[in-house]
Length: 136
Image 1 (cartoon, rainbow, N blue to C red):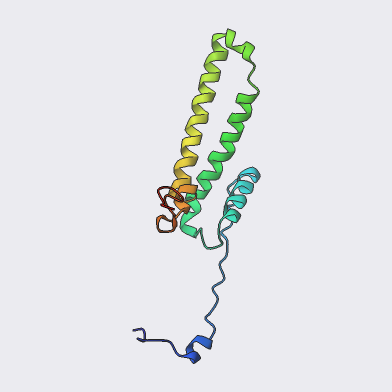
Image 2 (tube, rainbow, N blue to C red):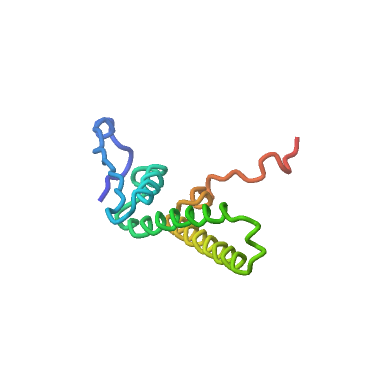
């Protein structure tokens, strides 16, 4: 049970142990491009943000990101002349659908790992109505 009351000067002078956080490494099963994405995502957050329990979600997120990039390259290389052909229009539709599916997967995984901007903002720290409705 914790001691009650103010802490003594002696107890405040004692240094608390430092916990060294180790960043999780990308799994060996990922491709080099996927590992690069994983390292950049892990390094973008504080060292203790991801634990081993996040490894499966992070792995899938890296796979979705690389696949999304490949689909985006295919869409950018798409020639509008191909729209005259039914096969070209069908291919474009399949690529667009696949791109949307990958984006939804990335967003869902990022939200579940609390990596989105919205999840990083604490409601108790937000200042509302700055400068609005204030009387001089």
